Length: 349
Image (cartoon, rainbow, N blue to C red; front, top):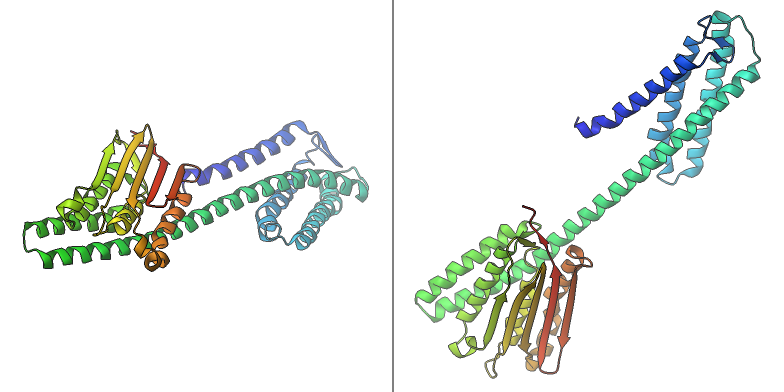
């Protein structure tokens, strides 16, 4: 058992022990029992045992087993049976057994029951406070764990949709380039592709990665895209990273869908590309701005599938950066523009 798991039992033992010894030292009379003739000690021990049973049966069994599952009627019935049973057992033991053996003074059975009602009501109040508080804390922890598990499952599902799509597109590009030209450029493409695949399959499984690695991934991706273009088209691609992004971490593969869309929809052989990708930093805020000329002729063909990757990244942003990001998508007459701001956290050195 870890230290954290031992602390609570130790505290409980200390509290019960302190309570018992305070009564042992300070209380002189307990109903018919007196400290002067030592008749008080056995009833004290017996009553403490019953108090502990009442406290923990209610707090650790009845509340989590019935109350937390909204079985209120059954809970209150069982609680009353437990409470009355403890009171009666304690009173019967005191009146018909302990008094006859250890005390010469006699009190009515009603007096014994009244005394036990008072002490057991106090113990039951403490038990309710402790049990309901503990149940509320455990319910919150369980709810947080369920939310965390749900987020993890959803993120894995979303990334599984994004990553294979990109890998197959890139593999097709490398294959087409290898068929088209048998030169060193093909080897360079395969080398970059290998680095991209390694990042996607291994490093991107982390919840957060160094921003330097994500930027390097984007560099390689854009270089690959430009290598498959003609020199004229490649010259029309503006890509720039400005600012200091050291010691920052980011969710992997969160930026690439926006950049993918720029090349997917912005390359037209009959027109100028006019592609712009700008990444810059304002303290701990990353800003991505993209712009591409719209390919109006392919809108209807691509409309059904073009939103899948974008919807996925929107969901990831909501899950990973709630209230810490701002996304603007402007579908203008001739251009498609995106501006994304994400507030990042620095690495704690």
